[in-house]
Image 1 (tube, rainbow, N blue to C red):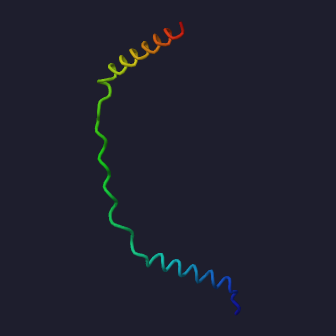
Image 2: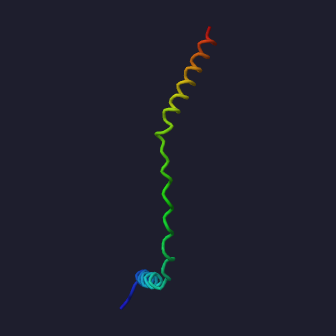
Length: 70
């Protein structure tokens, strides 16, 4: 019986790979704990203040632009 060297090497490689896969130590310990959730900060309390500041800045910028163009 004549076995081709290529088939013999592939078979030996498959057996050794399987052996080393099952003989490997198990993975690490338990997974790390999940991080705490972010704090629930309300954004709706200051939205009106933010809009008011944005409108004042917008009017200031428009007025400054109109004064420069004259």
